[in-house]
Image (cartoon, rainbow, N blue to C red; front, side, top):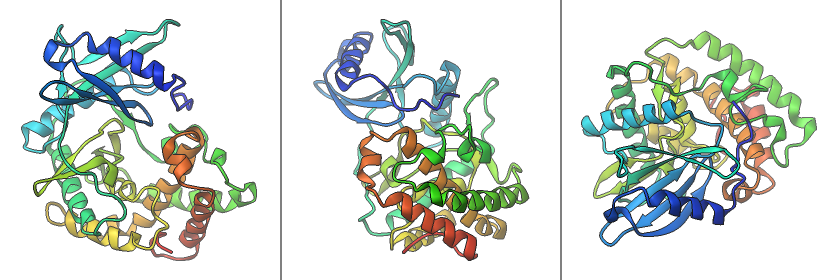
Length: 334
């Protein structure tokens, strides 16, 4: 997989591409187009006369057509089970995944989803928001454990090598902005310890399976007492407890992080159970995720998310690595 992560198209080119794609849908889906955000993909809001929709335009070199279709099959199964997630909408030809070829011959895929109502919580909210996050994560894990995946189901593989090695999906952590080369040995020591602990923990079916992989506060919506999950673009095969590490992504160093973890675990226990080994592996999971996001910032250096982190985020990451190496506690908080 390529680590050329960020899309090279300009915002105006993305909007023009969205306009072309929209013509493939029936009249009720036509409307105003607004670019919401760009990360792995571009997400656009379509506002028609009576409804809103979300159009996702995939960047190149990340997911195959079959992988995207596999994601939609899991979403179908989740909706059928009563877990409300975005539903893909077919175009006039009955296709849910659109393929379009750019002028240079590069193929692109796109999917339109129904709009999910709700408010997105932030790190400033009551820590109990993480209780809801843990509870919905437990439901997803329970579903994944019981769901019989269709033949030829294909999703991204998340393991130690694909997260933090020299050939990781999101690039090399050494390329993170503002990371001092003198601090590389600390991170390397932390990764050695992580690798040993993850190998010991193993990948048995009760610990490793289909996960959301990026279920942070920015990917849940709170509406009328319900918690709704969005953005399954990174879903794939990974450790279930990685979803807790992902829940506090970018914010592990903040003072409230210990409260968030406690609330997540309390929420999780309302629908599933963490064994002692699952709790014991959390320090390794959390620091592995933090280093994974170091790599992400390197290949997404010009995104709004990376720029918002400032020039001390990498230093805080190194501090957490030291904390992980020196103590048995969770590498979180101030």
